Length: 324
Image 1 (spheres, rainbow, N blue to C red):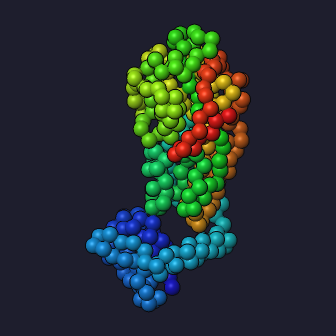
Image 2: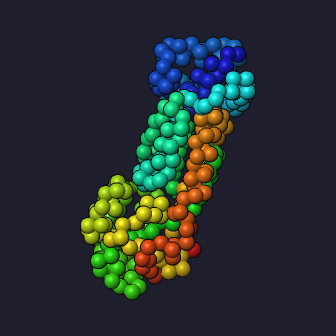
Image 3: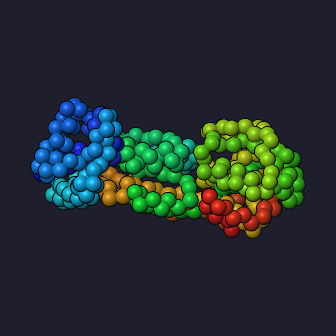
């Protein structure tokens, strides 16, 4: 049984497509078909159910996939044991949320790239669902997301850290002049919101819904830097992860809920059973050190000019957020 055929089999199982696998591996599609056919002939089973252009794993294919992951992992580890390259090289495909790409975490990835010039980096920005789909299909090696803890058995959580989601406005904004702004008062203001599908926007909309309020005036802006610039122009109120507000402009002020605030988990995910290559390991070391040193998890009262908003305790049915 050739290891390259098993690697091709894994790619086809992940992408669900012979043509996509051929593109990823830079093979002719006929080569992919021949390798899968060779495996099926050797094992005497059908590995994929074929329905026109749609393919799915057969029950025998599902069983082989578990062994294929283990065999490919052992082959890679054996190769590393005897070759042991001085520095990692290859292609690293990383996915992240837009807000993470606008934070210091993205610079850590660039530092890693500078330290290992033989690494080719591909970065894709998307929502959590989009990134998890690409990770599952093998189009990404690692994703960085901000969400409730991901408990999907298809993924392995390598690093995790809680991050506050904070409201903020211009210091000359009407809310900043109030000693204790309330959620009701905030609902009268214009909001600069992230795009639909953003997890912390969903948290905010759940808060609004739970209090029977409505967002009557808002602008939808999909870019963190534009949101910060808009609030600095006093165009409205917004909310972002704390790691986007660590170097807050002196023109802006943060509004903190009394006794409780929204927390989501910053998480680094890889595909479960995927081999942790030296390339991935070095990036994990860089990120782990960065997460340890990052100041976004300091107590909120130490951040600049905090105003407080009274919010009632909320229990979500469909969306789990943390309130303290």
